[in-house]
Image (cartoon, rainbow, N blue to C red; front, side, top):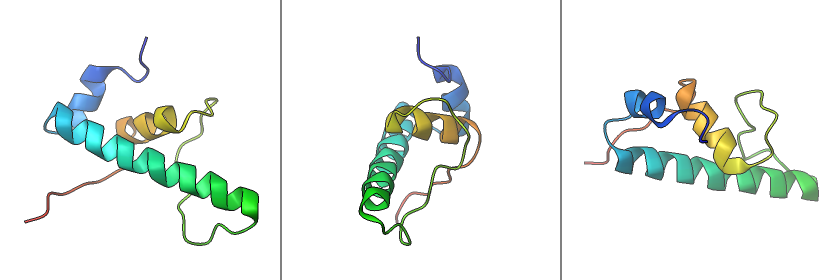
Length: 76
C-alpha cells in the first residue's frame, strides 16, 4: 500500500504527471543530500523536511508533498 494515499497527493497537485515530476526531482535531491553527507559536505542540499521512519528517498519525497512542504510552478 502506498503511504501517503494517492488521493491525498492529488489534492496537492493538479495532475498525476505533476506529482510524479515533483516527487522524482525531490527524491533525486534527497539522494544527493545523503551522498554529500556521507562525504562530509552538505551545504548545498536541503535535508528532509519531515520526520519519517522510512529511509527510502521516494517515500520521504511523497510525505513531503502530502504535508505541503513542496511547492512547484510551471515554467513559461
